[in-house]
Length: 84
Image (tube, rainbow, N blue to C red; front, side):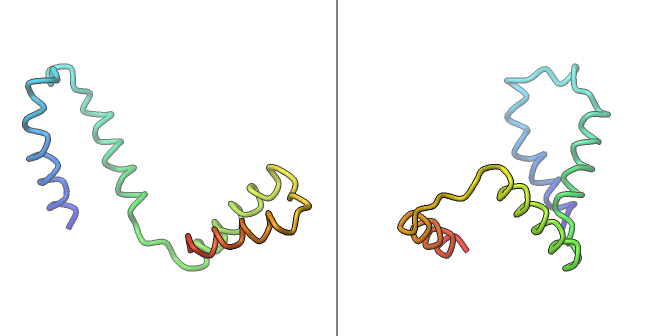
């Protein structure tokens, strides 16, 4: 699957030769980017995903105090349900 993704990316990037100077291409940076994409697209164990969600929620809740407005809170909850 990763090979197919990389192959399609190369095929799509071929017309870019007219726009970019590939002689100045930093291979090490390209390899690091591919590694980072691989890390970002890996399956995450459920316990790690829950811990990450808890951390993000704590950061968001700590960023600003909650509004003391029931109507606004209802609206935000509805938007959250719609997004979920």
